[in-house]
Amino acid sequence: MTDRILPTPGRYDGTMPTSRARLALLALGVVVCMNGPAFFLQFRVFEHWWDWDGPVVRESLIALAVAATAVVAMTAFGPGRWSRVSKAQRAAIVLVGGLTAWIFATSLWSVAPDITRGRAAMYIGLACFAWLLAQLRFDDLRTVVLLACTVVLVASAAAIAFSDSIGQDKNDDWRGIFTNRNSLAPVAALTVILAVGLAIERRGRVRVGAICLAVLGAVLMLGSGSRTAWLAMFTAAGIGLVVVGTRRARDRWGWPALVVGPMIAVGGAGVVTAVVASLWDESTFIQRRTIWDLVGNQIGERTWQGHGWFTMWTQPDFTSGHELLQRGSAHGSIHDVWLGAGLIGLASFAAVVAVGLANAGLAAWRRPSVATWTWLSAISFLVIENLTESFVLWFSYNWVLLLVAALSVGSARSAEVDRPAPSPSERVTV
Image (cartoon, rainbow, N blue to C red):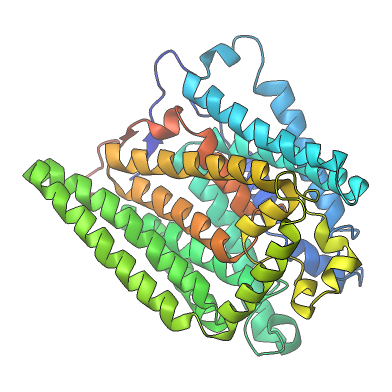
């Protein structure tokens, strides 16, 4: 059973011709944005460790940014094509473009202008890469992301199996080919969400493969010991279930059924709050609160305009203030955006995330299905992860996919999901 997104009459149809080669190239781009593989090669082959300007990480990111920008420049806005882009999607493009422009503008007053300028320019390429992904049909987008996840998770499992010094950190938590467990676990959790949705939809070998991939992701999450990834995954899956379930209940029993959804949501929020409260005094949150306080003090010096995008973590005067500041991020995208781009950048960032989340939520509400549940759960997971990790930095796949969600507004991805009639052997009751 496959999902295809219906073109919206009179508008850009939100899809691009796909082939296996094109999907493989896009998946390679997602792998680059996962950072772990590039850092792994950089360290193991070139013996150059955690450095964004190293010979593998920097060059691979530049190649991705230049290639994506070139493709968009040549194909996306050719004669007549811009007129077929919906008004809502144009607004999203302006919103994403405004944030990207502001990020680049922070180089004008940055504490290290050259560093800010170079890194901010990369985010223009990431926005273009997100645009290319946003044109894919849902099935193809899921294939791209799952292919990238499969590559890094299988490689991580091999690293863990064959070398403790490579696959585990000093606390014996699994990190695979990533630099730490908090980079491995979110990829594994995203894989579980996407693979579970695929397993529900399909039969035969595809279902078996999806189940195996979901199990691999769950096992790696367990070995990583990351509690925040588990909490984010279950919360996100619950959000998707509440939206889809409430809409289906309304369609079956009428408007009174809408009372059930909010009640379940409130109960779920209470459970999540209780779990967070139980973990609040554990080291993972104690350390984060310490970092947030330290970063907050620095934010106060340039509240509105920030210190320059993704730059303060290169400044010894700042990072030497506390040992936790030597970890390279605020462990929370809100703090890092505010630190680098100020309150203006934070407002723009919040708007982009809100549009992406709202778009996924509306798609799930308008046409509840396994596909729209998967997409909403995945986007919700990415948003929640940004509360305790700085995924807006690091040229991350997380940020790219959030941009995809935002750029899909008003396009075919927010239209109805049409399911071709399955053959008798493919029918699945959900």
